Length: 169
Image 1 (cartoon, rainbow, N blue to C red):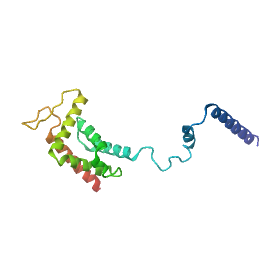
Image 2 (tube, rainbow, N blue to C red):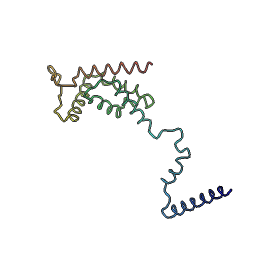
Image 3 (cartoon, rainbow, N blue to C red):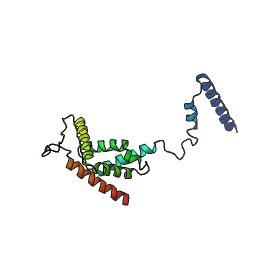
Image 4 (cartoon, one colour):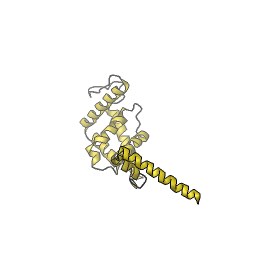
C-alpha cells in the first residue's frame, strides 16, 4: 500500500513541477503538438508527403535500373521528374507511370532530346569540373563525350522497356 501512495505522491510532485515550468515559460503550439504526439496525432499518415515518397521511389528505381556510370543522366532525369508537368498528370500514386511518360515525352521530339542531352552535358561538367562535351549534331561526336544523342536515346529506351516490364509484373 505504501508503495502505491509513494507513486501517487511522486506523480503529483511531477505534475506540480511541470505546471510551474510551463507557467514560467508559457505554452506554445509546439508544446501542444509535442504533447499530442503520443496520442495518435499522425496515426495512419506518413510525415513524408506523397510527392516526396514518389520522388524517393523514382530515385531508388533509377539507382537500380538505369545504367549510368557517370551519374549525370540520373541526376538530370530526377530533376526533370520533380518538375515535369507530364508527371503531374499521373499524380504521385503512380510514380513509374509518370517516369515512363516523361521518358516518352523526351524521346518523342529530337530537339527536346538534344536539349536534354545538353543539360546532361552541363551537369556532367559541373560534377567533374571539366569542360562539357556538347554534341552539335554536325559530324561525329567527340570520342570523349560520355553523353551523345545516340547513347542517351539508347539508355532512355532501355529504361522505358524496364519500366514497362516492372509495371506489367
